[in-house]
Length: 431
Ligand code: ADP
Image 1 (cartoon, rainbow, N blue to C red):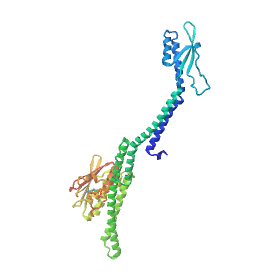
Image 2: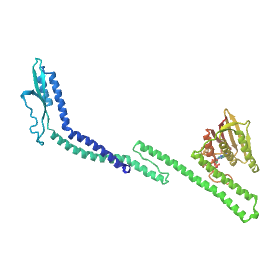
Image 3: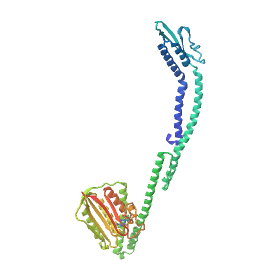
Image 4: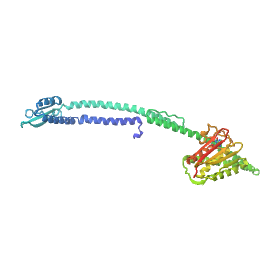
């Protein structure tokens, strides 16, 4: 039930409960227990007086002490046989004030052996009048407390709930997809922190949203073009089966390959992104693996005039996930080929530095502007936002490379200048 109450009413309920408890305690002490407590206190005062008199029974100061007791404590002491205390004149009459004195008789032994019996009378001021006054006060206090509770509840809840309500309204906007929403709640530490956190979340969400939009634009473009090509060539072949040329089938095959690599990239990225990747570490000959990949690619692209060279002086064994490292190398090699210069030359160089093997993939293409360099490893980032038909890319290749090398705790980087070609490299520990 309490969960449904707004903050204002919740604070009010708590404050009201607290004041009621306080009032109850006050009321109990001021009215119910008052006369009993008062009597207790007077009794203990008589006891103290008895002790005081006992200590000074033979002192010449006794008279002064008795006088002081009378004046200060309203306790007067008389010989027992001289005074009869006015105890409860009419015990049955409930309306009459009750006993007005407490008495205690005590026998003292004097120095000369005689005994002296004294009666201590403690005056009890009528309690009833006091109780009426206190009750009146209590009613007043109750009203004041109630008013204060409402006022305080309104004040506190205003202070606390207003920023929360504001945040909530902004968060609702954020939930609707308005990522530019700004959270600026202030008032106390937690709310400022929450506000900052939400700003951060909104910022991240808007980044993801932008990337998503960009990816959708890129991918739909990248999907639509090959699909349209494949369809039109297939249609042509269907209409004129006698005129099918190898060039046509080649186009269909190329475009299918393009589609496959696009789909694979997207799958790889989402798989790596969700973090569900386990490295299958094992010792293998990385030089050999690179040589094979290079040779395969070189053979494939020879007819297009590409020259791909692998420079190495010894075979090195490393402890890594072969499939994933090959993918890293393959992505870098593909980029180097895609962005290579007019000489269509790509050099792969293997060097050994201390305990590490360094693989460099060097091309002599356009290179990358220094302002673009920090971003190329980001997902969907492409330097050239216009789609060049010849250069096919998803902007995912390098982010896959980065993720895999990060998983291997490997060092990697790029040296590139605009017009001066690029040198992408990574280092792995030799097993
Ligand atoms: P893409 O699929 O677009 O190649 P990548 O993540 O592999 O995506 O690369 C990101 C961007 O980095 C590319 O769009 C390209 O502009 C730039 N880039 C990557 N490799 C090279 C290179 N060897 N030479 C020049 N630019 C490169």
